[in-house]
Length: 93
Image (cartoon, rainbow, N blue to C red; front, side, top):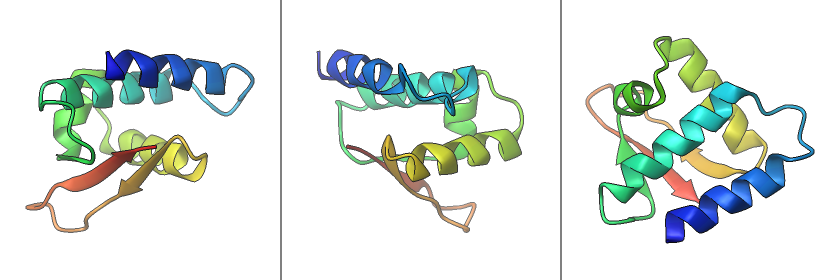
């Protein structure tokens, strides 16, 4: 139920935000699915490839660009890691 509230709030927020594309929406939905499979923890710890697979995004460059933008636009708080053996942290606001 909590994910539904987050998704509804996200769609209300992006209604007039021309910067958000279908790729941003796919990533946000994938993050919610990933979170739901982990007992709705906040923050989630994830490798980019895990989210890319759910969102059906092949390019790591596209994924990182969209995640950075979702963070910059205030839709989530993203703490990337440069170490590929450690997961990034994603906080839902």
